[in-house]
Image (cartoon, rainbow over all chains, first blue to last red; front, top):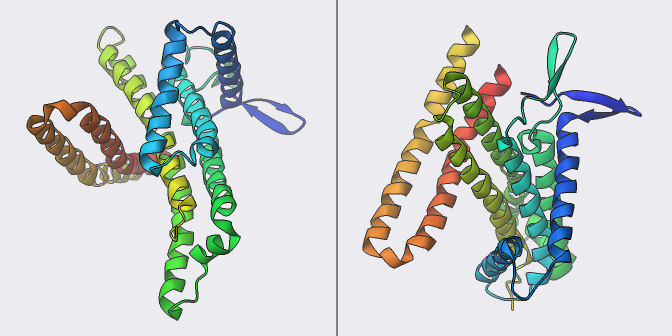
Length: 239
Length: 69
């Protein structure tokens, strides 16, 4: 269940989730490259899916921020998040994905494991999201107003307490971002393992469909929450 | 044995709230679709999102159980 260490490169532990992440990266690059090579005005199936998802997220950004100003600063990051999380979530449903393993000191070691069911990856993703939010905030509303959110001496004790709450809110955001994705993928893995051991034929099919739905919903939620926080942090109240 | 009992208690108590929340969200969404069937697409997306927010709280207790084992 936990990510196993496969080998050590110069003291850097290479776990099975790292291997999966690298494979998924290669898949994404190949996919985008092959779609980009055959771009047409009359799109084929894959191009339609990609164009639809781009337009879907552009519409969501415009709907949440009520303008097109922030589109070009938010869109690249969140679309990268979406594709990466989605394809990582889908790898859990590949047939034979869990079966590749070898034995080391009588412990079975999986060669591949879904990367989003490892807390390290989800924590890294949420850290990137939160740090990018703060960067955009400083860039768009200026460092003075940004610091004013957290340290404020107006009406002395009240707004200082609000600023303290804001700082705790950032830590809570990190925890909820990372644990939501990690927990959902881990729960899906556990449910499917139980169902496979109870009834390996036909009965798992609805659960696999449910897992596909959960994968898409979790990827979309991660992205939408990132957009909402970016909007809150880059919104200029005075004009 | 103690770990199993406490794990069961954590999951049982921790999933009361999310279960009620998901029930309320689902019933309200169905009500809204019944009143305004054309908006079912938008309602469905928002319903799924709200449901997964509620579900996340049950997931936190699952993580506590799993990490205690």
